[in-house]
Image (cartoon, rainbow, N blue to C red; front, side, top):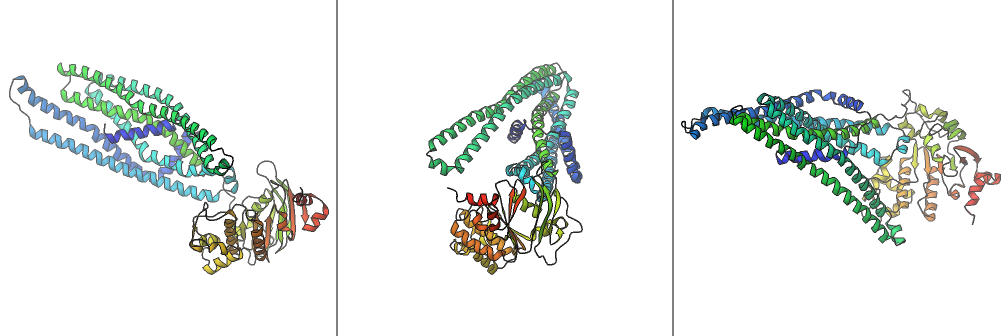
Length: 611
C-alpha cells in the first residue's frame, strides 16, 4: 500500500470517526434531493463512473498478466534448477507481458486521474450552485429567520456543511464505488483461482472488520468527549478575551487562568484518547490481515508444491487479497463519513426550505410625488400564536416628527419593522399616502426610508465608502457635506488617510459614538423621504448628542420622521408622541399634553429625575 493511499485512509478514518455521531434525520429524502441536484451533471457523472470502472477493471487484470509472466519464468527456469535441462525463457513473450503490465497500470492511473478530475468539477459545480441558491435564499427570508437563528449556525451551514459535502462528493463517494468494484472483482477472480484460499482470506478480513466496528463504536464516545471539551475550551478562551477589562478590574487573572488550564488539561486528556484510538485501529486491522497472509502463504505453498496451484496464480491471488483488504477497511470508514455528509446536506436543504417573504404584488405601485402621510389602520401582529399588537391605529401627517416611547419590549422597534415590511402585518393595513405598503415592492418601499439603528454597522471599506453605502455614486463633495451635517467631518480629518482611511466594524481608531456619527452621515447622504431613528444617539455623549440633534432637526425638516428614544429630553419638540406598552399604543399627544395627563408618559419622564 503506497504512502499516499495510507494518508488517504487516515483522512477518511479521521473524518468518519469524528463525525460518526452525526446522522441525517431522513437519509433517504436527503439522498434523493442530492441525486436530483446532481442530475444537471448526469453526463459528467456517467463519464466519471465509466472511467472509474475502466480504471479498476484494468487494475484487476494486472495480477493475471503478472501470473502469466511468473509462470513463464518458472517454466523456463525450473528445468535448469532441477538439473533436467537448460534455462529456456521466451523473452519475446515475457517482454510483451511486461509491456502489457506497464500499459495496464498506466491506463488504469490515467482513467482514475480523469475520474477524479471530473468528480472534482462535479462537486465544485454542485457546491457553487448550492452556495448561489443559499445566497439568494438568505436575501428572501423574512427578518424573523435571523431573529430565530444564531449567526454562527447560519454561517456553519453556508461554509462548513457545504465544504464537508464537497469533500465527500469529490473523494468519498467515488472511492467507495471503486472500493466496491475492487472488492467484488478481486473476490470473483480469487474464487476462480482457488476457493479454499479465498475463504481463508475472507475469514481474516471479516474478523478485521468486526474488530474495526467494535473499536469504531468505542471511539465514538472518545470523539464526542473531545468535541465537548473543545467547545468548553473555545468558550472559555472567547470569554477570557472578551472580558479582559472586567477580569483585570476585579483582579481575577489568576482565577481565570486556572479555569482555562483546567479546560486545556481536560481537552488534552480527551484528545489524547481520541487520537490514540484513531491511530491504533490500523495496526490492529493489519495484524489480522497479516495473520491471514500467513495462513494463505502456508496453505498456498502446499498447493504449489503438490501441483494444485501454479506459482503465478498463487502470487496473483496474494495480490488480490492485498487489493481487497484495504478497500474493505476504507469502505467501512467512508460509509461512516457519509452519514456526516448526509447530515450536512440535510442542514443545507433545511435552510433552502425556509419560508420566504411574501411575494411582491405583481401590480406594484409607485408614488410619483411622495408626500409623507402614514396611516396605521387596526394593525395586528404577533411573533407566534399570541398577538403582540391587537389593533394599532394612528395617523401621521406629512412632515411630522413622531416619537415612540415605552418600556423595554413594548413593541417600539416592531412598529418600525412593520412599517418597512421587515415583518408582515397579521391584520389591518399600513398606508403611505393612501397606498397599502403591501402594494409596493419591498425594494421601492425601503428606498423611501433612511434608517439609523442603535447598533452602528461599519463594513470593510474606506470612510467615504461607508458614508456612501446608500448612494454609491455620490460625489466626494456630497459625502463631505453629509459628514459635516452629522458633525463627523472634524474627526474624520484627523484619521491617517482622512476619508480614504480603511475601516471595519472592529476598527479600534473610532469610538462607538464616532461610528454612530458615520451611520447618521450615511442616512443624511441618502436623502430619504422618511427617517427612522432607533436610539440613534444612544452611543454618543451629551455634548455630541446636542450637535447631532441640531443636524437631525435640519435633516428631518419637511420629512416624516419616527424616533425611538429612551432619553425623553431628545423628543420634547416632537409633533406627536406615541406611548406603547405590551404592543399597543396607550397614549398619544405632545410632550406637554402627556405630562398634564399624568399617565404612563408622565411616569417615565419623571422617573429620569427620581433620586
